Amino acid sequence: MHASTQRIGFIGVGHLARCLISGFLKSGLPAERLLLSPRGQSKTISNETGIEVAASNAALVDACDIVFLAVRPANAADAVDGLPWRKDKFLVSACAGVPIAALAARAQAPRIIRVMPVTAAEIGASPTVCYPSAPRIEDLIAHLGPVIPLSGEQHFETATVSAAVYGWVQKLIQVSADWSSSQGLSPDTARQLSAGIFSAAGQTVAASDEPMEELLHHLATPGGITELGLNHLENHHVSEAWTGACQAVIERLSKN
Ligand SMILES: NC(=O)c1ccc[n+]([C@@H]2O[C@H](COP(=O)([O-])OP(=O)(O)OC[C@H]3O[C@@H](n4cnc5c(N)ncnc54)[C@H](OP(=O)(O)O)[C@@H]3O)[C@@H](O)[C@H]2O)c1
Image (cartoon, rainbow, N blue to C red; front, side, top):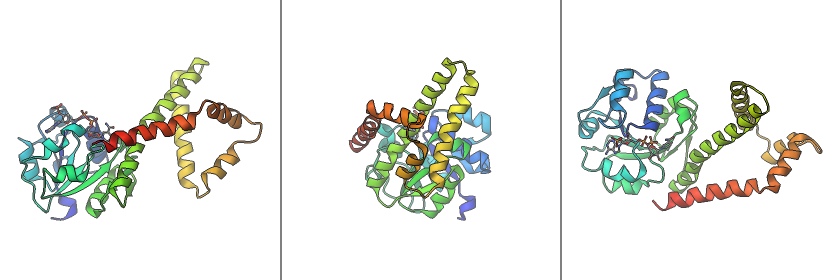
């Protein structure tokens, strides 16, 4: 079947799936190409969007060429078990820390691809890692933002930590905005400013080839305010704490 006519199903219609579905619809995929499993937020999303709800997970797998799996990690293996998978189908798992082998043990037939989108998929801005390479899935994921193919599953686990970093960055945006509004900026202005600054920092780094050390060196004028704050943060071991948080997440992911 041609890529543009493939039916795309969702098993696990919760918070993440809602963002993926919203991103796909905004990018121009017609609602008729999507199909929802009957649990979670399916009825609400169906009422909002007109996307059909399958009678069962088995009926969904039967009807779809590509099936996204977005259940909680602990439910992933059970959710794919006993369904009518075939060799020509793709099972695309967004379940953090669930290895391909754990899914393949319960769903032998389909090609299994792991992806790790973030909620920015809703606005077409999710950098999404993908493993193993599957051009048809990468083309589809590109509707949700930049696709980052990876060459090994261990790299995928490492990259999954960035999905948690995405939340920590939002915490920093909140802390900066709260401080600005405590000093008198309106909460809306403080929020937009803080979000815009973090976004601008990310875009600048992404657009530059300069080593990060150099970029930071140019920013931190000796005796200036950037240097002052960076020194304060380092005196409070912020880099060490951040790295420690990344390590804690990879250790949790490795336990699955
Ligand atoms: N949230 C994020 O931003 C994010 C980002 C990247 C990756 N992920 C990954 O995405 C997955 C889902 O996260 P979430 O935050 O979206 O969780 P969630 O809101 O709890 O959604 C999970 C959904 O799975 C459904 N479900 C469980 N077992 C099922 C089954 N056998 N058949 C059909 N549906 C089933 C649940 O339905 P019921 O309510 O009926 O039980 C629930 O609606 C996780 O594995 C997570 O690692 C999440």
